[in-house]
Each structure stands twice: as structure tokens, then as C-alpha cells.
View (cartoon, rainbow, N blue to C red):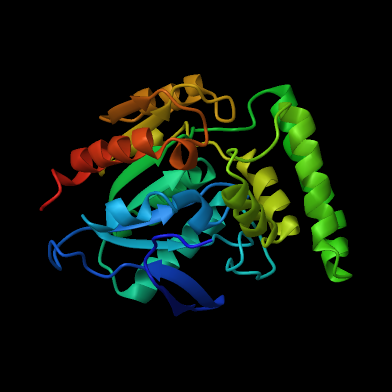
Length: 294
């Protein structure tokens, strides 16, 4: 499926190897425009998360995006940990490899946890945060802790399936389990888009993705998120049952001075409701950078 996206280029991350990134280059408004890191959510790829967002945001800023470790067709497949802190270190490595002084991290869902961890670990690299459809902590209820424990334990089976060339079997089983749990089929109801979205998702390493879920369940920024000292904003999805809206609001109010933009949409707003999400993201970026230059 053709999407309106910045071109791919390959960079090298020390100790990790090559990584394919989307890089729009400086926009028409000039080389002094901000650099925005688009950090995608769990299970999806950069293109799946941001396909509706690339073009409008690239008008105002340099846009950088990549498939996170183990995700999508391009995510690094290095062995090792899948903590949010490790993914934040990957993002920092991208910034350094590009020679960018400071960037604004825009994180969606799990990407919001990564963005928070990036500020905590690499504050010198960030000039702003925009946290979308995300929270301070994920593994809070007994059910959530049980679910992420099961996913963590299942990662070995996924690794064995991939070793014998049957990564597809694991992904199909995971999809069936997700649909049973939510009571809804995956997708947005557009057959071509849904087919492409499924291809993007199952191109990822199920082992890595499951370990990411286990580690996301252990992430908790509540002890330090009030210390954020860069300009920041929160985009809340007001009808979200994946990351409950109440937790998104808790994050917004725990931050020291967040601009809050709430939209009437579910967790898939970035894809399903770009008519709401893109203006909301624009308002959040205006709060961080000032109004976009024309």
C-alpha cells in the first residue's frame, strides 16, 4: 500500500548495526525548524502508526521515524533486553547518529513510555515531549499483570516458532487471542488498509514484541515524571479502552505544566480518526514549539 511518507535512509547505530529510518529532511520553513521523533506503539510499525501523520507534520518540522526494536519489517533484531529504557537508548542513538543537537519526542502508547524514559535517561537530547494515548504505568491491575506475564512466558515459544520458519503461526495465534480478549476484530474496516496493516504487524519478531509487552507492564514513571523540565503536552484519547482514558489524564496532571488536548476517539485515533488526531497533535506541538512557521 502506498503511503505519503518521508524517504527511507539507512544509518548505523554503534553496537546495534544498520537501521532504516524515515527522514523528511528540513522542511520548507527552513533549517531552523525543530526535529520531531515519531516513536510508535506496541506491535505496530512506524508506518502503520504514523502513516496519516507524516505529511502534515513534515510541513512544520524535520520528521524522523523508525521501527522500534523487534517491530515491523525494519526493527533491529539484536538479541538482548526489551525494556522501555533500552528502546529509549535506541532513540538516543538515532539522534546522535544523525548529529541532531536536540529533538522533540512524540510517543504514542508504548512509544509514550519510551519517550518518557528517553527524557529520564537522555535529557540533553530533548527539547520537548508530546505524549499521546499513553500512561505513567501499565501493569497496575491483577489482570494486566497476568496478561503481561503470559506474554513474557510465551516469548520462548515464539522464538522457537521463528527458528523453524513459522513466525506466521505465532502471529496468527496472537491475533486470535487478541480478538477473543477484546471481542472485536482487528482493523479499521478498510480491506486494503487492514491487509497492509496485518502484513506490517506480522513482519515483526513476535518474540521481541511479547518481551516488549512484559517490560511495558513493569514500566512506571510515577516517581519522577513530575520532574520533566522541557516543554511538554499530552494528547488524550477520550474513548480509549486500551490505555484507559483515566490513566492518560493522570499522566497529564502528574506532569508539572502540561498542555492537555483531548479528543473524542479510541486508541486507534492516529489511524482511524486522523481528522481529530492530526489537529490535536498540531496544537500540542504549538504548545511545545510555538505556532508552526508558514
